[in-house]
Length: 163
Length: 81
Image 1 (spheres, chains in turn orange, red):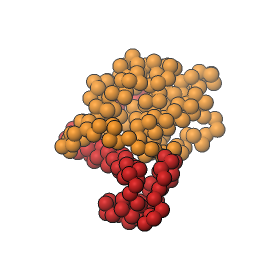
Image 2 (cartoon, chains in turn green, brown):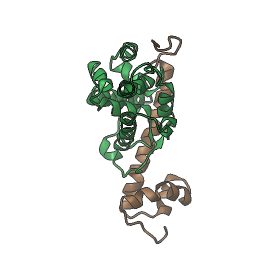
Image 3 (cartoon, rainbow over the protein chains, first blue to last red):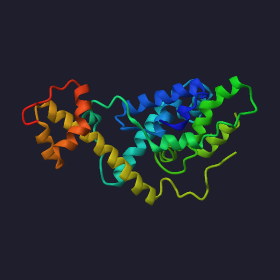
Image 4 (tube, rainbow over the protein chains, first blue to last red):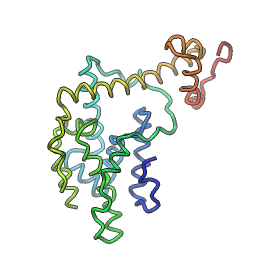
């Protein structure tokens, strides 16, 4: 479990988003919850983080398409054509493990970024703080997916940090 | 403001592509294994037969997939299991 989930003071909205990330992982047949699943869960929200993602073309469908595109390109780099979802249909484990990338994303997030604000405001922005943690990864699935989708990751981070 | 590290390699460069291919292949192999083992067990294969086809021990395949397939409600073959 990511260390942040052990934190009793964790904002309930963020906690719910992290729990939703588990469902995103299960829906995709993933054996671990990774940063991309947290990104999917955040993009499904209607809070300021979800709305900001949507402004950059990354609503839930947009993130899903970007991630699929990244996997297809990565497989093709090894000479493999994508396999049809029907052939990959299987009963999944009810609870995937926590992956390294989601732990790293929460570690990179600066949850003290808005410490000068009122508690309600800090809670409102906790999901945006987590999103910045996801976006700060320079290598791996998420930055590749965003690059291929033509999203300006640096501009998105700047926008979120200005909230 | 913390912009992405400018010193970092290109996430879509040739080296990153090779490394991403490894990740994508592992993920694909894991998902294909889950699907293929489930399909075989639904078709009545025993653990021993699935293990032999995968070239691993019966204990290994059982440990990895038994709980998942029980959850799926698949009637597992006991004979030669």
